[in-house]
Amino acid sequence: MKAAMRLALFLALLGRSAAAQEQPGAPGGTAATANSDGKLLTIEEAEAIGVRNNPQISAGKLRALESREFVREARSALMPEVSLSVTGVDSNPGSRIAAGFLTNPTLYPRAAAGATVNQLITDFGRTTNLVSSSEFHAKAEDQNALATEQDIILAVDEAFYNTLETHALLQVAQDTVTTRQTLVDQVQALTDAKLRSDLDLSFGKVDLARAKLLLLESNNNYEASLSTLSAILGYSDRQNFRPVEPEQQLSAPPLLDPAQLIQKAIEQRPEIQAMQNEVAAAEKFGRSEHDLWRPTVNALGVVGQAPARDDHIASWYGGVGVNINIPVFNGFLFSARAKSADLETEMKRKKLEDMENNLARDVRDSWLDTQKAYARLTVTKQLLEQANLALELAQARYKLGLSSIVEFSQAELQKTDADLQDTDAKYQYRLRQIMLAYQMGERR
Image (cartoon, rainbow, N blue to C red; front, side, top):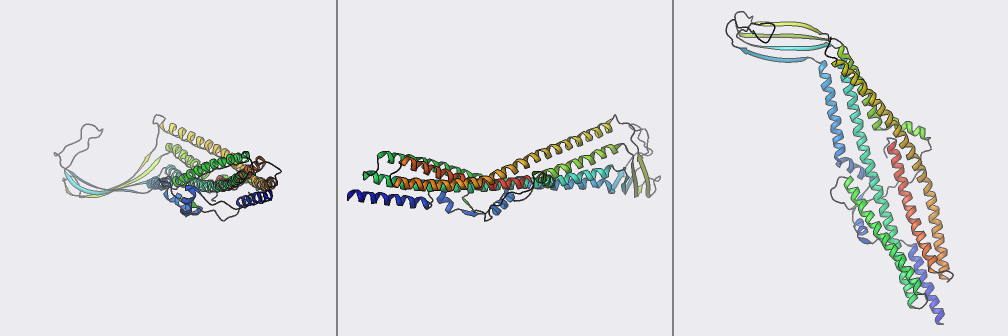
């Protein structure tokens, strides 16, 4: 009769253990409690905060605005230059400038005011090429600013999903501790009732200690991920955010050939477009440096009045002239500048070629990583299903006394590892999708 009662008690306690393993454990620990009271944060909100707060984006936008002013600066050479002058001179009658000049102009006492207009007629394309070079450089800075923004968004997305993953792994660790604590309590009761040996209790406590170590590590990783997310969003202190799981379902990776993805990336990546504009700017600047050898034609006009003057000076003056400047020799300065510009252009072409080669490699590697991560989803799902089945069978055998707690404990360890692998696979696939979209210059 006593043996039957003990057997019934043993089966009841193991039944409770099974129910505890099927139900998720209550969140525990400081991190979980703080997270339950934290501020909800979606990935869209995180991206908006990161773009708004990160100083690198502001610096990139300021550089783009500065480059547009350089365009206006270069274009100003095509417009008239107008200046007003007021002059007053007192001199000894008949004074001449005798030293320092080949000519010896006469100085007359006078007070006069007038205007001077200087207009470039043509320099045979040099100024136009300089304007085009500045415009391409401004476009490159716009693309660089966009590239900086995409870099920040990628960093925010990675930190956001890393926080989600570490929180999910923390939940797995908490559930594991709860389950194994329940099992240890039950085996303790059975040991006290002389239904199980102290060896079973020792194995149970070892597994519980392992689960607690896993919980400590998971909690530390979660705290670190929150700190990283807060820093990327522009906060000096760790913020108590509660990242919200996106509602979008996991989708299959693109079926396009990697060569097609590489072509799209070359067409869309802002870094590539920026370097293409830099090459075009260097080409235009090189042409302008070659144009230094061409003549420059300017028109000059002056007009004014001298109300107080010497008798030799008329009350009004005015004149118009044209000046043609033809360079002949300047110590090979223009040749050196043209050669330097050509070398700079060739260097940027090679740099663009290197960027395209690296981008092709990165897109191909990212595509392979995405394919592998997607295939891993199926494998980890099967692993989790088999681990659950193995745990059920091991639990049933342990109930019937057909196996030791070692087999049951091993099945629990495999179940925990399968949970961790399955959780990691889901978030790693999301991150691989984000990285592939980034490599192709697309938004998430």
